[in-house]
Structures are given as structure tokens and as C-alpha cells.
Image (cartoon, rainbow, N blue to C red; front, side, top):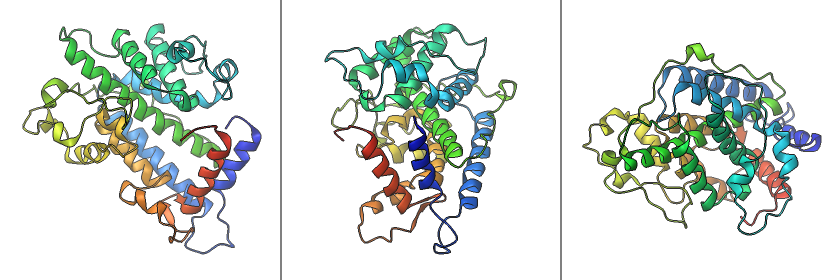
Length: 328
């Protein structure tokens, strides 16, 4: 939210259930308990579970940047939502040129790495409606050429390129999760619990060999999405690196690998896919129930998730539709 009015609007959505409503509705206490429980689980996950490509210090930084992103005033002032960009504008370079300050500081993260991560996080959170294929290609190039994100000790350019695709998915997944959690606490008027300390972050990234894990190169089909992606049948399930992927993780990954699934862009993020799915069970709609929301015969008060009703779903859709000038 960028204004008091929108904050009130979203807060009303999350707190719409009162004692006067049916007992099967979600109380404010239930909503708070659900998001607090998920946040505790997510913090444990960050400490104990390896990422896909990014080292622990970068994963933690991404989560911090995503929490602060809605208050990046420099971004909203230089590139306001209503601004119309000239055709051919290099969106990535435009956002990269914005000088963004954050409260999170880690001296071990170089200035160039910080700039790349902040540019992608800011783009995803604050300029989502502007993103396109050219922006994605620029983000991949930035990930590839920024020392410290994709390992540079591998001379195989194809391996590094595939890891850049995976790193993008990882950044996208962590950004969406961390930002969603922080906004939920804000609209529920609850203090945001701290993220883990850097000293607790011990797990190293999986760094799978995606060139042998995949039977064919990552797809690019613009009618599905502008990022690279794969489908379940593209994986070599006899590969030794595939054996390193747990059944739960593969279930989330493969479940995301559908051209109609909005999770397609994070499907390469291995373990982070599981946490995204668990967040959906709290604040969004479980994937198995996703298409049910289009059934007009459903009771509008029915729960869509642990802390989200169909009423909330429609209310937020209404708020977004009235806040964004978007063809979709």
C-alpha cells in the first residue's frame, strides 16, 4: 500500500470477519495465528534447508529487501505507477539507475550484488505490471555478470546460464514469499517478527547440474510466460542430481510446471516451491482448489485457505482492479 486509504482497504479485507458473522468464518485471531505459524516455519526453513543457487547471505538479503520494498520511496517517486514509458525503454536499466537505500546492511555483500538483487526485488514488488521479456533477459544477464550469485569457477557457459535461470526463480520465489508475509503482518497490525541472523544461516546451495538434469534446453514460449521454464517430462529422472530432489519438493516443482499455472516462473527454485505452496495454503488458495474460485455457485463465505476466504479473494481482486491500469 502506498497510501493510508489503500492500507485501510486491505486491512478491512483481512479483518472483515466479526462475531456477527457465521461461526465457520475466520476470526482475526485465527488469521494472526495462521500467518505467525507460517512465518515461524519459514524462518526455520531458511536456516535448515539449502537454496538452489544463491548462498545463504544472499537468500537472507533477498528476504530483507522484499520486506522493505513497499517503502522504496525513491522507486515510486522516480517511476510512479501512472508513468507511461516510451516504447523501447530499457526497463531494467531504468530501475537499476534508481538509488535505493535499505535498512538491512551486510558488509560481506558487494555493492554490485546488492544493486542486482535490489533491482530485481524492486521490479517484482513495485513495477510488476511493466515487466516483459526484455526485462527478464536483462535480469538474467545481470545475474550472469554479477560476481557472487552464480558460481564463476565453472567454465561451462551453458551450466552457468542454466544456473542463472534457476537463480532468477529462487530470487522471485523468496521475494514473493517474504513480501507477502510482511504485508500480511502489516495489514493485521501485528509487529513483524525478525528474520534469522546471518550467523544462523549455515546451509550451502544445492547447485544441481541442470544441463544433465534436463533432457532438453529450458523452453521459451511467450504464450505461456516470458521466463524460461521446463515441463515435468523434460527432466531426466534417472539422473543422480534428480535423486537429490526430495519427493515433496518434486511434487511442488512438477505441480508448478504447467503453462496455465502462475507458479511456472518459480518452478526451478527447488525447495522454495514447497514453501510457496505452504504459503498459498495460508494466504492464497491451495493449488488443488485454484479453479474452484471461478465456480459462481460457491458460497462466497467459504474458506479458500487457513486465513483467506472467497470474500477476501473477491475483495482484493476488486481493490487491485481499481488500483492498476492493467490490460490483464
